[in-house]
Image (cartoon, rainbow, N blue to C red; front, side):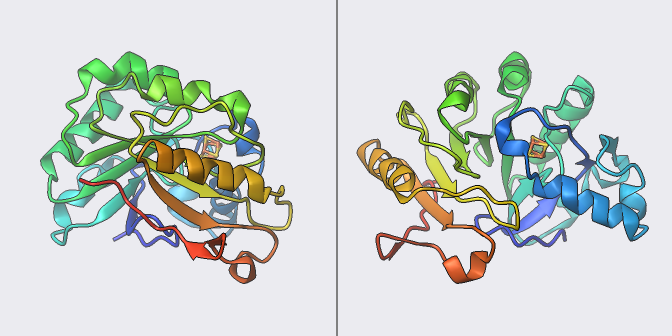
Length: 235
Ligand code: SF4
């Protein structure tokens, strides 16, 4: 089982690793830094560092995990990256269809390709499809996400590096909000997070406040307005 420290999932499955930065939210990409470290440590899966690498031997791994899990797909990549062939993406969705006792969480910033491929994907209800939006400049991804056929759609507003005032959360089932962490983290203002919490309430979108982030993310915690928000969408 792929272990993960990501609070809103239970396991990770990385049949593909590696990606490239396309957006302001990618600036301090955790996966890029982690891949570099794993390469330096001699991990054979990361011999190409953060270049896109397909691990065919891991394609059917979730079928071997008998206990139902929430599984984050490609925590070390972006499943709709331009270097990943269509047939590989479709094969991985077929595994998700087959492993219907799990819930798969797929997160992409390449929503244009998601829309192009959506009609070829069988959207069983155990697949949650999400996109990352870090500020008002990336709201277009939410609009594209709404065009795909997934039954559960979610937005990850992490790292939240600016207000997302113009977003329409109708049709979005789940919203995750989090500040950036680490030594180079950019600050998240409380008013940005509160505005999103209010919007989620209005549109009855499940709201998950992951963290304030910052240099010491543990110390900064995950209370917003003195309250913990850890909701998940209704399956
Ligand atoms: S899309 Fe995601 S995985 Fe790829 S570089 Fe950006 S933050 Fe990292």
